[in-house]
Amino acid sequence: MVTIAGASPFRTTATIVLRIGAALPGNYAAIDATGSLLAILLAAAGMARSDAVVLASIVAILAFLVVLLWAFHTPRLLRFWVGLLIVTGIATALCRVLAPVLP
Image (cartoon, rainbow, N blue to C red; front, side, top):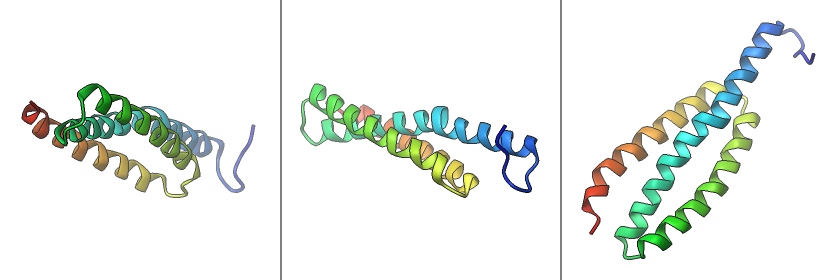
């Protein structure tokens, strides 16, 4: 078992669980919302819907990988969680506002 110097095993385990929670489901929610928003914005800008979805999916996959690495690299996990929640909330709200505008 790997432990951080001066940290209890429970604290280390809890930190790892929180990082995995941020890296997988938290990251998925944020990237799903922002990918959907990007697809809506590209379609509203005149791109064909199918092309907009494909391009947004490619960008979202790359962004997912970057945020996944960031989740395990950041020293401030709380700031990372707050950032994920803010990005998810804003992107979801904008999707709900902009989606009915599409032709």
